[in-house]
Length: 186
Image (cartoon, rainbow, N blue to C red; front, top):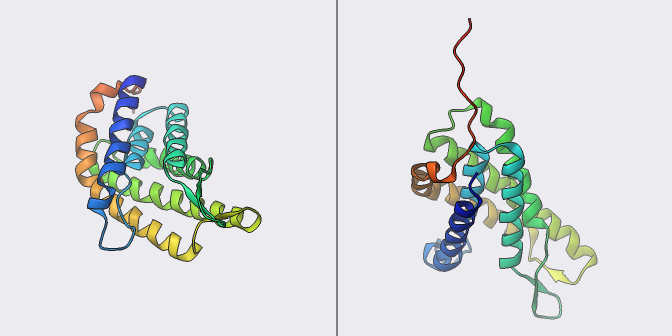
């Protein structure tokens, strides 16, 4: 995979996430699509397992840096790890199931984006809730946070229809190492 193209597209995805989150929110609730998860799933569907997991760590750590968690006495803090582990779990689920689907179409990307985003949100909510027991962070009510995260995961799947089509059109730029096709030897 071309690392420079990945970095550029990752930067664009985070720019879309950061710049248009308020415009894409559903009403007053904090439900919006998560664009970088679409990129992680796109890479996981086409790249070797090691490359997919490294890209998941990069995207997850960037999520951890961008999104802060409130503290009990006021202020905000960056907690490294929850998004990275959640993104890795989501990508690993994609890697495990990618041999069972037609990976070139947008529907596989949409379905796997929803699954990866749900897994990421469950891990993030769980880890932050457990950490808030012994630390000064205040992630909010875990049930409400998880509900917003799951709704955002479904909204991400809807947005993946459009963004997935764009990523599939750009797949040649990524230069994925696809396995050679062999003749059928029945």
